[in-house]
Amino acid sequence: MPTSILADAVLRRPVPAASQRPGAGSQYIGPRRRALERNGLGRWRRALAALPLLLAGAASAATYPLPPPGEDLVGEPGEAVVAPGETLLDIARRHGLGLEELKAANPGVDPWLPEPGRRILLPTHHILPPGPREGIVVNLPELRLYYFPPPGPDGRRVVETYPLGIGAEGRSIPLGRTRIVGKRRDPPWVVPASIREEHAREGDPLPPVVPPGPDNPLGRFALRLGFPGYLIHGTHRPFSVGMRVSHGCLRLYPEDIERLYARVPVGTPVRIESRPVKVGWSGGRLYVEAHPPLEEERRRGLSLTPLVRAVLRRVRGPVPEAVWDEAMAVVRAARGIPQPLPSSRGLEPAPRGWLLQAGAFREATAARHEARRLARLTHGLLEAEMRLAGDGKWCRVVLGPYPDRAAARAERERLRRLGIESHLLPAALGGEPCTPPSSR
Image (cartoon, rainbow, N blue to C red; front, side, top):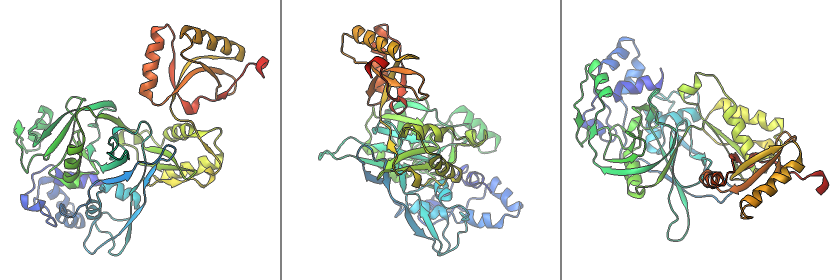
């Protein structure tokens, strides 16, 4: 049975307060759970009745030193041993992980009746998301949030990472950039009309406003995003973290949102992304980390486009076929664990940042004339460079590199006011320098 169906049996109904104590399971029997029982799924009923929350002793967010430029991995794989009567949900809660990521890392293990004494791989090794290491970055397929706080008093930087519960299929948060625009302790939940109608149809009416307290789905802390109606908040059902069960908001474990709430100021930038594949370097080797894509994307079939784009942006020059074969094997397995590509030894990392392409020409001489024209228009403040395009037939005229997309966009707007049109190009795809024949 899909985890989402089992989870839905308990997530959509109030749970007695006693069930929120460590080790206590939900004793509520709703219509969905009765349907499970009528279908003879006794083992699922036993697992459902034993769902513990383990609020005491649960691991808090993982915090790692931020690696230097050129290094992209944090953490290391962990291991746990299944105790008698324990589920993967128990192990996930205790180690500050989500159920879905623990299942993906341990294929073939029954999440509700794992064999006692079995060793469970903990997915506590991560490739950092690409882009600026600042603010909050949410990767939806990974069901994980990264927070890059400002440097501490000693100048050192860290990254914090938290498991997430995200919106169910069809209710996902928008992708893009926004900011934290407000904070609220003990927030009331103003129930949207669509959710009230849905619950009314199922015989579970909701009031227009759910006040703060143990039955409030927002938990005790909420960070309001610039996307209207969307929050990063806690939950009164911690076992829902690490699943796709919300109405669109991002939910964290109670202890995690309390920590994040205290540390994140209003105005913090937020990026919401969908990256089922991440690629990074560590110790001179290329790593690939792959997660199952969101259901909306999975129905289109396996796509290797995210992998191809990610690899080409991180590797300088041609990529050997053996590296592609190893990378595709990681994507097909989609275990959420960074895997080194043995054949990547000897490859070079691609340059980081962004370029602005102001033209592309078949002849390098024409490209040189355009580069000189741009220099005159910018009064010599910007020096245009010529790069050979990937197919070797075009000579690009580029400006940069710029440290991030925001800086490149700002420069593009300044150039536009001078009558110069350009578009963004990852520095990794800029190609090698090209020179006119007369200059060689």
